[in-house]
Image (cartoon, rainbow, N blue to C red):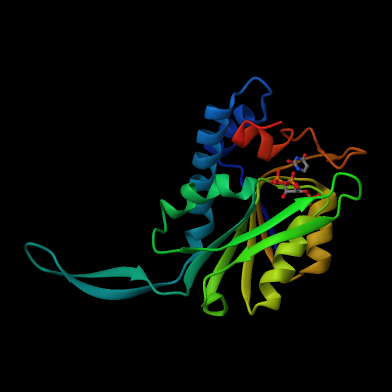
Length: 209
Ligand code: PRP
Ligand code: URA
């Protein structure tokens, strides 16, 4: 059974506040998203399994530890999920990166898939799907569906901000998934925007409108 984790680390919370601020421009928004992704990844990897190895230091043999678990894959949901990738792979440079292109139809709020390109060995990898916003949950659910259809077995979801509606929808559709967020907000508005949220993540990240 998957769990929902809200990261309350002071640095994550401080940076998230600046990300939310409407006066924060594209450059700072992008840099802070990257930093929060790194900090969240540091928290997420806390439980990764280790194994003991021997390493020769300049003066002696040390028993020391290295990562032992499955290899990782990072799967950004295009566009906005891209803003979290560099911050994650800074910590796990061997991770492979796949892409799922989805946009939310502004009228129906249903996700429309337009691109999928994944590492060939996704079934052997622990995958982290990234998207700053979990609103209705439609995009995350469709991305996870797409990954499972192609053989993925172990998937988690990492978002900056989630609405309770989106969290419930993902839990119902994919009860096996862990969901990691920096902020769990109040609700969605009638246009499917997270309240208070941060606005349109893709537009703020890439400077479009
Ligand atoms: C945004 C966001 C998520 C999605 C969340 O993307 O980045 O992917 O909406 O909404 P949902 O949970 O209701 O599906 P958008 O559709 O605006 O596309 P973009 O990233 O290309 O701007
Ligand atoms: N997508 C966004 O970018 N922001 C929201 O608040 C909801 C969906």
